[in-house]
Image (cartoon, rainbow over all chains, first blue to last red):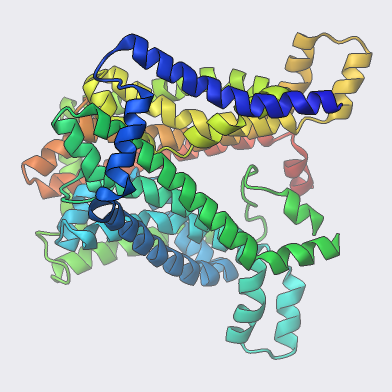
Length: 258
Length: 275
């Protein structure tokens, strides 16, 4: 058995290294400016992003992601709770939620510019926020609906005010599912950031990507793609850590129940 | 409580069951009609100027007149083509790979790290690379759509195969049922609901990316029409095209939701609800 375990650990480390090695070897062999060597990309990555252009381009992108995400979370939860609690509200709202959720986001990119009268942060944040609402909203609705009805009825028979019941019962009970929705929204926010920065922008990681394309600079382009991957990965890790902390009570409670 | 934990995102949400069926369609229609009227009103009364937000009737009229042209339908067909073949390529690759990675513990561990790193890379970030390497043609569009649709389907297939009842597999093994037959008789049917959910998620992703490719790379399709409308400042057309794209999205979503229900029909989660 331990033999198998050792094999697994070896493979888990060896396979990614082998892939990176193959990439390096292939790009050296190919010797094509379109596919620069992995080592060249890493050097460029270090020169661009650690940290000479960090303030100029990464900070604005992070700001847009952060604000758009925050707005989406607030709106998603605020709408999701009443919709989750009321069957009528659900019947009323679902057609609209389904329509906007199925809409491919880039179709609204030009419209967002017209409606918000901006090609700056305001439009980009509004665009990111709009599409990040849906995972939070749908998960909040599902989370609220899954609450044990006895709990709500008990609260009602004890004449606990509705606001108090929402704060003490609904929000805590739905929080793991809301957190799941928030995590989906966060990775969506990174994608929406890239899309919005492809369209009339003057700063940000997506803008760097666009400019390197227009000037045929392949190394910065690959470095920017790498950065977007790393950014998405790190944001996810940070979120998971925060979630584990904030929902620790929930896990403990679950474990005690089992 | 344990049941709540098991019910992960892999299965579709609980459906509304109780209630007065006759009222539901009425509320549904009323809700849509009132939203459309609201749109008409805020535009006509100038809460948002008609230049920024053409009235609902104007936008639908524009859509109607676009629908009279063959150019619109060719573009529509191009988008559907990009979506369909992108999804198809993703399915042909993701399902077999997912079955292998899902049934072998060792293979799953070996590729865990590369998958975890590649999966979150937004496909949209690859557009500049495709632009300069493959070029602005259908191949780029297909690559993008397939790349995006590949990941959710791969993950769902892996989960589905991992979730197959080991007792069923062991029983089949002890009865001398061969590998291939086990795959067809046990693994695939029991993973089918997960794969169906994966297909639903991937179908949406593939459409988004086909459209994105058209918008930013100019491959023919609805996205390219949006690009033109934007360049020439044809705002009403932008709204009409957004409506059309939304309808296409809803259509694809409904199609795959019903496929998913079909795949789930025999599954315990559906059966218990029906009784």
